Length: 259
Length: 257
Image 1: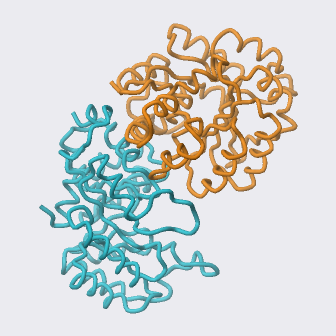
Image 2: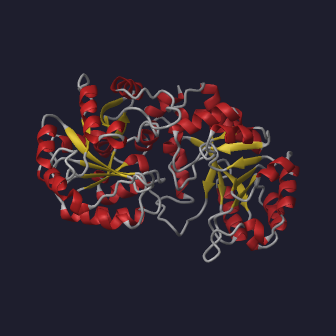
Image 3: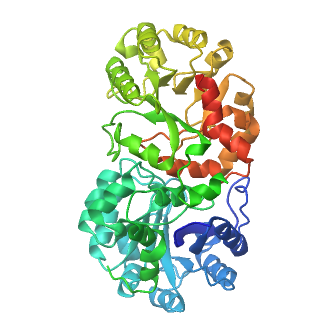
C-alpha cells in the first residue's frame, strides 16, 4: 500500500487498441480497481477508450454504467464538438455531469489522418459551460508541437476559471513553455505521467507551489508506478505531495478550489 | 519486497541498483532542472548505488571525458565513467585509450544524433571514423558499448566478442519478429530508458531477450531515477529477474564487485 492518497486523473478502461493488451490489463472497471488496490491508488477518473476511438456518446454511457458499482471511480467524460448533432449540447452535457464528481476530457491527436484538433472557436460553447461550472478539463495530447502552445496559451487566458489538467506524452523541452504558462496561469495543472525530468517536481513546486502538478498515470500505456514513485521520492513537503497525489483534484472535483 | 519498500519511499540501497545510462552535463535544447553533481543527492535519496555517466551532450568529447573523469574521481563509489566518442573530435582510438588508461573508464557511449545544424541527420558513419578499431579495443578491454545509432547489425554480427548495449532498446525495437532477430545475437543487450516506456514492450523484451540481457537505465537527467524504477518493478517477472535488470547484469558487464 502506498503512503499517499493517490487519485489518478489519466487512466482508461475499455478495449485496448493494440495487438496485445498490456500485462494485467483487463479493460474493465473491476480490473482497474484491482490494479488500484494492488498499488494503493485510492480513487481514479477513468475515461473510455470506446469514447475516444469509436463513439463519444456510446463510450461515455458505457463508462458510467461500468463505474457505477465503484464509489472510488469518477467519470472522465470525453467531450467533442456538438455541431453535427451526434453529441450532447454543452448545457445537456453539463446537466448529465452534474450528477456526480466528474471531469471532462478532450483527446487531442494530431498524429494521423483521423486526428482530433483542438480548435478553440469550435469548442467555445462547451469550454464556456465547463468554465462556468468550474468543471476540470483534462487535455490529453498524444503529441505536443510548438504550434499547439499558441492554442493552449489562448485557452488558459480565455477561460481563466477553467481548471486545466494538461497531459503530455512526455515533457522535455516543453519545460520552457510550461514555466511561462505556470507563471501566467493559475488554472494550469500538469499531469505527472508525462513529466519525468530529474528534480523537476522539486524545482517547479518551489517556484509555483503544489498546484503545478496533479497525479495521473497514463494507465495502461504506462504503469502507474512510474509517476507514483516519482512523487513518493520527490524532495518536497509532505503536504505538497498529498496535494499532487490527489487532494488538489479532489478539491477541483468538489468545486471547492477555484482557479 | 522491493516494490513494498519503494511504495513506502524507503531507500533501496540494499538492492544494489546501477543506472547504466546517465548523462553528465547540460543539453542546450532543453531545460534540465537537476544536472551533474546535483544528481548525487538524488541517487542517495532513492538508494541507487552507482550511475554510469557519459558526457556525450558536450560537443568536445575530450573535454566531456575529462569532466566525467573528474566527476568519477570525486565520487568513486557512486560514479562509473563511460567514454564518449565521436569522429568529428579527432582520433577516437587515442581518446578511448586515454579514457581506459588515464581515467579508468569502464564503457563506451556513441550517439548518432548529436551532430549539429546544418549537418543534423547526417550519418556519422559517412564521415569516417575508426569504428572497427573502437569495437576491437572494446572487446579487448571488455568495455560494453552503449549505442544510440551508429552501431549497425553488421557490427553486432561481425564483432561477436564486443558487447553492444542498444540504448532505449527495451522499448525501442518494435514488434516481436524484430526483437527475435536481434535477440539471436548473444553479444547484444538492451537498456531500459525510453520516452514512452510501455509496459507491453518492456515485458516482451524481457521475455524474448531474457532478464539477463536487460540493463536498467534512466537517461537522467532527462528522466527521474525513481520514475524509471516503476516500469521494471511492475513487470510480472520474479524478484530475482528484477534484481538482475536493476544492477546484476551491469555489475557483471562492467566487472564490478
